[in-house]
Length: 290
Image (cartoon, rainbow, N blue to C red; front, side, top):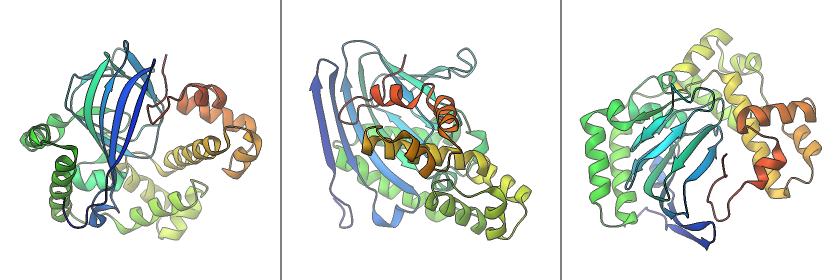
């Protein structure tokens, strides 16, 4: 373990639902502005496991260490769905489904959108509402990364390797546009409760210019990102209070009324808040999909 590496946290679950182990570690401190966490996972379930992947405001890199995962877009099951092994999922403005066949093993890296933009060196709107194979994004570098992670003997060795590889790629990347970084920070600070006009005024540019920069370096326009961040804040508050104060939470998160809150929830999770919360699996197992 390198000197500045934090300790890993292990969560295990065993029940009729299945067995899973999740090993999580924060990245090295120098990376935390752009990388939110590492998660190694091993899972066995009685049959096919399908989960809801709601929009999160994060970009996820999955490196498969076992069988492939099927990714399903309910809006376009024929065109955007298919199996993936190691892939990057960009920002989404609607939920997706993932499906595994009863056994799964892999590694997840969670980036901020700006962190993913720097790591990949690609316009992020090319990844919006998509899950793209790592090979297709990074070519030989992506194949080497996946191979080295598969060969590493322990989760800690994989996390340490990621610290080094990500740090090297970020060091070679050009700095993000200062206005985008500031606007992203402000949207996070306010839980998405900041209008595009006010945001552009703070940055000192036109709304049109800010939207164009957001599409390139974040993946979605700021108004959509704000909706996703507001939705994610609502989920956190609902989980904390087990959904008992829906109306108050809707108001606190900036929704016009409870109807507006439920409409956004259906758009982002495919179902109303109570049903979504009721589908949560224990011990970080995700949310059961149809």
